[in-house]
Image (cartoon, rainbow, N blue to C red; front, side, top):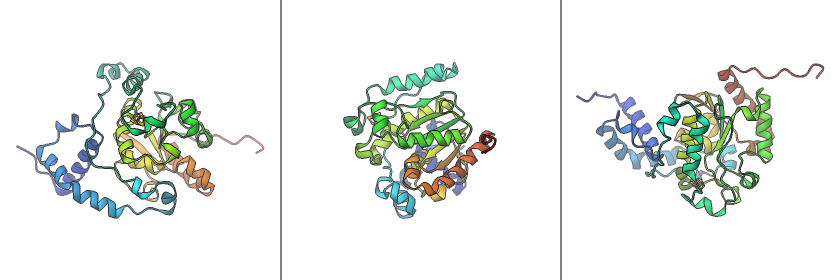
Length: 285
Ligand code: SF4
């Protein structure tokens, strides 16, 4: 006999299931979730979308970085890529599991962004990293080199990583979309929703202890809802059994260096979760 759920639990489940369905992940949630939840997901679609439209008030910094109309993710199913082979994951060879995902991506033409790209930017870093950064998408330098965060924003990210007492090679870095949006515009929801299942598969393989979402686009597609950065920063979010921290995108920090202090405060939260202490300044400095 089906267990009765209180309304808060039911609403939370509806939101969670809808989020996964939007990612194209449908197989696993059908086991524990009953038909009533599926029906509630369907019934909640128009009302929830309208509510999200009305409650997504942009903060000044987010308005500068992520136009509101481009932050709205469409609520429609997308075709899910096959899951990483269980046996590869069970072997513990994360590099091999990530390579399977890269092979599955192939010379991808799943969304319109493929038309303008030079190179697919899959990821960079240690598959066994305890810390993972997620950005929005490649820029011109990244598109040319096929690596994430290698331009000016990448140099700033490297500095942020060094300030945490780590090397870039010790973390894993990926983006919501793997091809450069024209003119570095924010990815369209269709593009982000098509590409982000690959990011989720990468995250599920790496399974870092801490994820850092760089900017509003990464936060939106990881958390599955939109909210101004001000409401997401400064705390730890539970995310698929990991800890997620939201901070500014380095490109935004280049435009507004006054916010670096705030970003550092966010990174210190990540460091605390990881048990890291900042490197000591050189003696005499
Ligand atoms: S952005 Fe992602 S989904 Fe779109 S073409 Fe590139 S790799 Fe494929």
